[in-house]
Length: 144
Image (cartoon, rainbow, N blue to C red; front, side):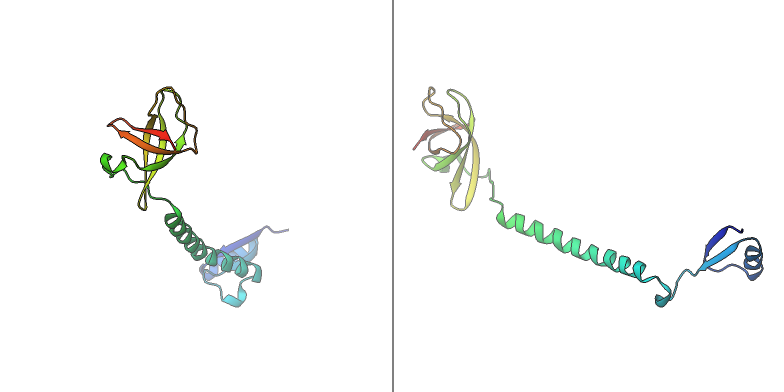
């Protein structure tokens, strides 16, 4: 029994004759005609060809939606604009400790480190607050 050999492309005729003499030879041209390609292989190739543009469109669509849905965080707001504004505690403020608040100024959200205006008071996350003082380190807030 001769071993099977699959070869691609074109070889000189004497080489092909010698290979046929020694092996069971199978030939696959480099550019087969479409009707010569197995239908299962054609279907797999079509799926792979379509997956690239579909993936790119999905990626672009997802990134666009995320940008539209994302709330803008901006640190270019002056400290004086924050005074007496309302916000929400995002990280709980312990007694005498730092926490975090999100303050909405128009259509822009600003996040700042915060302390309770009264040092013995703690304010839990999700509580509505008002900014009573602004320093370089943080803002001071009190629960509404």
